[in-house]
Image (cartoon, rainbow, N blue to C red; front, side, top):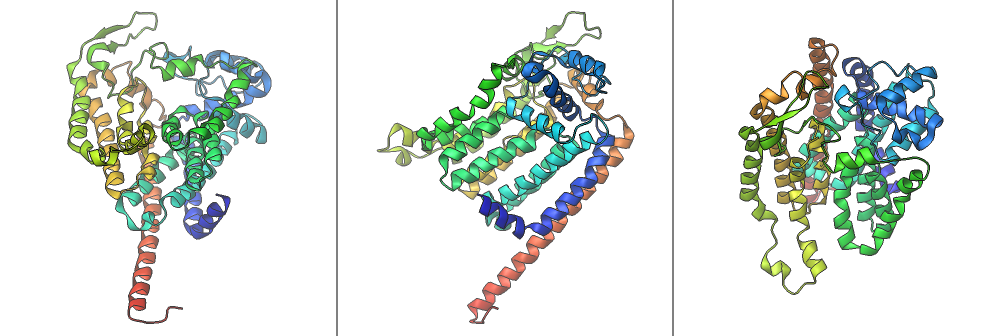
Length: 453
């Protein structure tokens, strides 16, 4: 894997340098435009680890911010904690992601100042490595297939926002996930399972790959289980994962807000959020909330046949082999998981996009990308279907917009970052097209019997 990474870094060095420059320009711009609450919060918990250890998992943000303020850390400013409706949520990120930020703050101590930008910078480096790993997995498809280029372009924008613009953990999760896929591709199944386990312990969503790995090589799951000791051991030193479990199990105890516009539960239980926190929350029926799910089901019924194995594919095979024949159907059904959870932020929609590299047929991969586009459309359309709830005061949209302190000025900054990202993509595409033309001319010359030097 290291040899492949080194080779592709050299091969795409010009693109990576360009991406790094664009990212470094975007970091200070985004820091002014956006209150990067997740990054700030992870910064606070990373510093707190060296004082309280894994006991921070039993603290909520408000308590920790006040405690750190008494120790001289400038975290009690309202921008290092979750919004008021999540004020009782204890730290919920898995252990490996927590350790990443603890080490990062140890490497660059001193709260505030340049430390937040340092965290963005580290994530930018990880994002650039992700681009290299994707180029390894996609191989020649990156030059030859339209779906691969569209996926790569989408991931570039997504990764730039998550790292330079948001300081979120997603680039690290994806890095470990993509590493595990590269290792699996090289038949290093044990290492792949161990790395996948670390990815799951950064954020849980990458666990969707585990069933495929398990079916292909069940014995290698021992390494996945072994990696889980990264989370088990801290539990003996005060770590608690109650908030993570309530989040994962979709419990209303995590948040009374429903921020997923596709969530079917809004049909019969759209919350009427009180203006005063002490007031009780009531729920009401809202039939239009079911429209996104209905559209999705109709779309799936029209397209799912392509992913179903034929009877001939299943005849004479063992149960495990039959299940493996269903792997493409399983992958195609994955985006439907996004309808299940109450808490799905916009960037979650690209969480499952990297599994497109597991499709062997181009028509399967292309169809999967279309499905991801449909789900993104339905998320946006769902806001319209339940506009009174999402735009209310209080309401999810108003809280989301509150992360952009410059209001109208934010639009100009976002436009600047979009222009930089678009310019980068144009330059990448121009270079790819130029290489394609050179390769085509070389093939034509060889066909004519000319010597290529």
